[in-house]
Length: 74
Image (cartoon, rainbow, N blue to C red; front, side, top):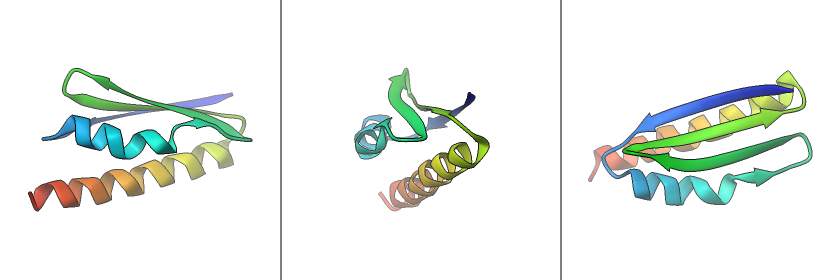
């Protein structure tokens, strides 16, 4: 089992959390969890193999970058 954790500080952590939440859950090769920890949004991913972990992290990181770019425009 492979595991990763991403912590993101945001101006509007609740909005980032709400945007990432639909992506969380259990899939065939990985499961993920999104939650708030103070002013941080935390994403935890557990995967059966490195390839699945990498795919899940890439998806979350793309969304986080997009949300960060949108947040800068606010």
